[in-house]
Image (cartoon, rainbow, N blue to C red; front, side, top):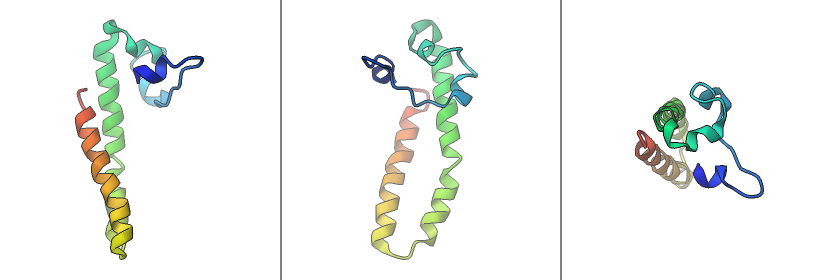
Length: 90
């Protein structure tokens, strides 16, 4: 987040306004220490939002019949879910 926000010449912002807009007026505000509580709440909101899609992902993978394609899909999903777990509460 901080590397993207501080990118020169122009910052890169990928966080959805629908979520961060509930916590701050500008996405850049989340980098300030005084907004750390809001930053973690916003991060947790985004992680929770991403987890909503896990069920659909698992249903899709359950329908795959080719083991190679299943592995191609499943391995990144497991890594991603683990990453979300590490991100929750920063």
